[in-house]
Image 1 (cartoon, rainbow, N blue to C red):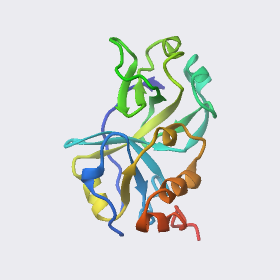
Image 2: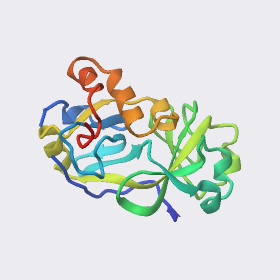
Image 3: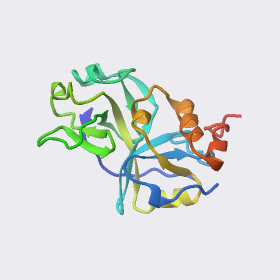
Image 4: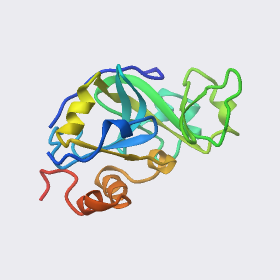
Length: 207
């Protein structure tokens, strides 16, 4: 598995129009709506890493795998939060590792392996020495693969009611919740129709 700090690609999907592309920015969350039936993304919460005219990149949160970090990236598991496994970040380039860390660092020093995404969340250069970050991060998580949308694709999916975009938090990235539990927690802290939806099944196939 090879480390990387980002690329762009594409999935696809399908009504309840909640959200606006203008709300999408690094650090925001894309929350799958019940109308989204694609099994790859149904019931997911995606943390946005990058968004521009050329596309959008993010990682799916709350999907731990069975692959131990220590078996692939020795040294990094000591900084990882529990469980110390790779999380499935999305269907694109699943042999690529992306690492997100929470750090109070305001301005990264020259040559720092940290690159701010939003707030206290940073991308980590996995080619660096993990010992450099012992005093700088409060925890990290490693993702295998990522989710990507080409130019205009995400806008179409939001218009179709597939996604809602809401503010993200650092504890969404490193928190212990996964799957439907995370989805409900994120939806439950919203207002209006989104909060009401938190009581519905995240996966529309579940009744």
